Image (cartoon, helix red, strand yellow):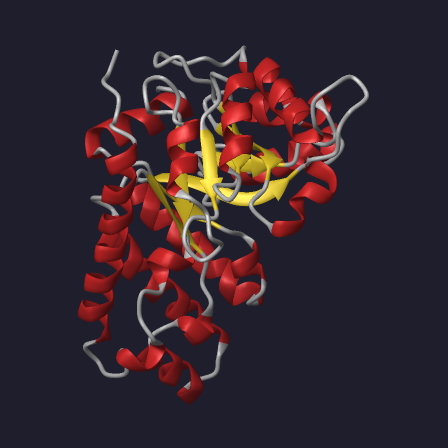
Length: 313
C-alpha cells in the first residue's frame, strides 16, 4: 500500500484538483427542512441522522472534484454522542467510497498519550479486539509543540499514515506566538517547519514528498513562501480560503516546483453556499447538491488558473 503523500498526490493528479473539503457540521446552517425535522423530533437519534444525511449529500456532491475530506472533530464533539456516532458513520462511508480522510483533531501530548491518540485515529484495528478501527483516518493534524517524542508515536502506530503538523495557522492571533523571533534566527513557525522537514525525511514517497506535512494558513501568502523554502518535501494543508479571507495566491506560493505540494482546505465556503430558508421543502437534497458541487468546482478551477497541475514522475 502506498503512503499517504503518494495517495494524495495521485488523486490530485487524477482529478486535477487541489481542493480538500472540510466536513464541519453546524446544524443552524443546515437546510431548513433538516432543521424543522430536528425540531419536530429533538432526539439524539434524529440529530445523528440529520448530521449524517447532510454529510452524505456533501460527499456525493463533490467526490468527483476534490482530493479528500477533512472532518473537524470539534464540530462532532459539540453534539455529544449523537455527533460522535454521525462522525463514525461518515468515516465508514468515506472508506467505502475509497476517499481520503484527513482527521482535523490537532492531537498530541507526551509520548504514551500521543500513542493512545494515534491508536484512536490512525490504527487499522481496535487495540484489544483486533476488529477494524471504525475511526481510522488516512491522516491526522497534530500539534508539534511537544517535540519529536510527541510525533514518533503516530508514525509507529501506522507508518503509511499522514501527519499535518501545525506551523502557521490561519487565525488572526496566530502571530502572537508563531511569528515570534527566535534567538537562533527565524520565527517559531519557521522552526516548526524545519523540525517537520527533518522528521519527514524518514517517510519520503515516490513523488518526493513526505508523509509529514504542514498546516499553513492561506491567509498568510508571504509566510507560505518562506515555509516552502524551509520544508520543500512537505505537503501543505492550507485552511482559510473563503470565509477567513485566505488568498488563492498562497496556494500557488506553496505548491512547489511541480505544483503538487499544496492543497486548499475549504469548509464553510463549500458546505453552505445557500441560505437555510432556500431549502425548506422535501426537494432540499437536489438543490443543495447542485449548489455545493458548483462551489467545489468554482474553487477547483480558480486554483487551477493560478497553479497548473504537475505531471507524474
